[in-house]
Image (cartoon, rainbow over all chains, first blue to last red):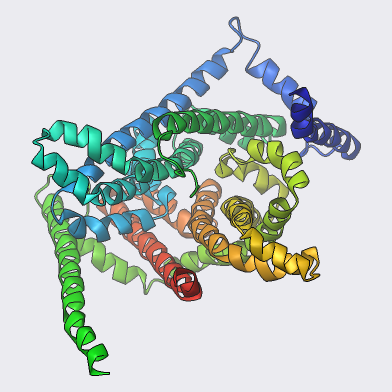
Length: 258
Length: 269
C-alpha cells in the first residue's frame, strides 16, 4: 500500500525540489520558487480568522457558486430540452443544424454579446458558461434519447407503463451513457469559461484576482491563481467522476470512450 | 449479374428519398429559426438584437472588410501553427506512456495534477514568458491541444491487439518496429479523434488570448472592440462576427470529419 503510493508519487516532490533549486539559482522574477508562491498564498488567502481571509472568501466563493450554478442550470436545461427533442417525432431533424452550428461557435466568442447586454457582474459569467457548455449536453441528450431501444419502448407501451415511469425508468437510463459523455466535456469547459469571463468582465472571482495580479506584474500572485484554479479543476473533475461512477456503475464499458 | 443489380436499383431511390426528407427538415428548421429571429428583433421583443436579415448582410459585408479578414487570418494562423506542433509533442509522449508502463505509472500523478488546470488560467503567465503575443498564443495552444491527443494516443496504444504485437516480436522485430508497424497504425483512428477534439480547443485558446491582450489583432480583439462600441451597430458587428466564428468552426469540423471517414474507412470494414 505505502509502496505503491511511494512508487506513484515520488516524482512530485522531486519536481518541486528541482523547481525550487532552479528558481533560486536563476533568480528570475517570472519563475518564483514554490516556497515563495506557497508563502504568498498563505499570507494573502489562508491567514484569516477561520483559515480564509476576506479576499479569499470574497473571490473564491463567487467563482465556485458561478461555475457550479451555471453548470447545473445548463445540465438541467440541456438534458430536459435534449430528451424532449429526441423523443418528439422528427423534431431532432429540424433542430439538428442549429445545434451543430451552436456547438461549432468557439464558446468564448459568446462573451462580448453578454458584455454588451449586462456590462459587468454575475449575469455575464452565468450566460457565458451556460451558452458555451449547453451544446455538447444538448447534442448528446438528443442523440441518447432518440436511440432508445425500440423493443423496450414498445414493450412498455403494451404493458401500459405510465409516461413518467417510461421517462425515468427507460428513456433516461438508456440515454444516460451518452448524456454523461456530454457532461464530461462540459465540466472542464465550464471552468475555462468561468476564468475567461472573470478575466474580462468581472470585479470579483479567481479570474479577476488573476487579472489584477497580471496587471501588477505580481508573479507569485499569478502562479497562486493558477494553483488555486488547478485545485478547483481537480476537485470538480473528481466530484463529477464520483457521481458518474455511482450513476453509471451498471453500465459496463461506459468509460471506454473517454 | 441481373440478380445483383436489381436490388440495388430498387433500394437506391428509397435511401435518397429518406436523405432528401431529412435535408428538407434541416432547411425548414433553419428557415423557421431565422424567421423567428427576424420577428423577435423587429417586433421589439428583443430590442437589443439586430434583425436576422441585417446580421446576415453584415456577415457578407465583413467578408469584404480587410480589417476583419486580417483579424480572422491572425486567429487562424495561430491555430494552424499550434495544432501540428501539439501532434508532434503529444503523439510521441503518448506512445512512450502507452508502451512503457513504468513511465506511465511514475508520471501519472503529474499528469493528473496538470490536466485539470484550466488552460486559459495560464494566459497571463504565457504572456510574461513568451513574447511577442503570437508566441504566447501558439505556446498555449500547443499546451492545451496536447491533452486530448496525448490521452487518446494512450488509450489507442493500450487497445492494440496483443496477438499482432506478439506475432511481430516472435518474428524478431524490435520494440521500435512493433510501435511503428502495429501500435501506431492501430492507434491512428484514436489519435485522429484526439486531434479533432484538439482543433476546437485551438480556437478557444486563440480567442481567449486575444480578449485578454485586447487591441492586438485576431477575432477576439475584433469582438472586444466591437462590443465597446455604442448602440445597435456594436451588437450588429458582434453578432456577425459570432456567425463567422460559427461558420469557421463548422467548416473545420466538417473537413476533419470527412477526412476521418476517408482515412479510416478500413477500420469500419
